[in-house]
Amino acid sequence: MGIFAGIGILFGIFIFLLISFLWIIALVDILRSEFRGNDKVIWVIVVIFFPFLGSILYFIFGSPRKIR
Image (tube, rainbow, N blue to C red; front, side):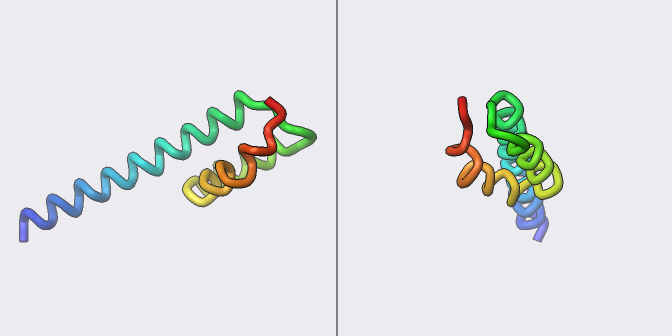
């Protein structure tokens, strides 16, 4: 059972790093881009309070709405 616990821990670390990387990339992209009105503030709040879901929603819906 020891090897399965080690694999589970490695898998958990991999998922954590993947979500963290996605979150950082989303925040950097939001902060470096221009949006209309208060869209930037709204996306930052969404991504900070809902890191995984907010990042995915940003890349699906928010990224195409950028001015630059």
